[in-house]
Image (cartoon, rainbow over all chains, first blue to last red):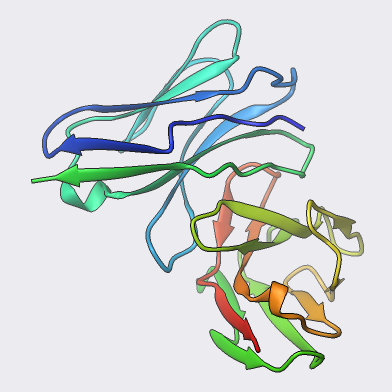
Length: 109
Length: 111
């Protein structure tokens, strides 16, 4: 089971780019890397998923180096509404995903 | 589409009581999951079902049972509730085991 390590918390300001890095040293060959966002009193919501190199969608980018032992979620020009907890998960057909404590992002005015 | 629905939204039990949490999804997903989340913590997987008719234990299965009634529904049962089971319970579903869609959660308090 692949365990992940993320910073417990981060602070930013509106309009800045935020990069959250996740370490997953024992990632398996068939594991994908997935990031979720969770607001208080809500279930997590999918942000982005990738296997290698770079993935970009309308809300974020995901950078994965060649060794895949880490990944970085990049949120461009954050706003106050991006204040949330962000979780990094690794897993594939193995359904036993391990959720860490996540990174609590605070975006200040 | 309603997505993933959970009932009830809130529940208070006394120690030793039993109850079933219901979950349904209308996205034709194969896989379904039950998680619990305690204050300040990440989610912990209780049970999951990779497909209709199959269930497997997750990280914290003790004290719980599940039933994959059909492709749409996946229920979680507490046979004899304990205060340690006070938590927020989330149900989720996914098509291929990747992107998971979550329900709104059930807030359970066991006195």
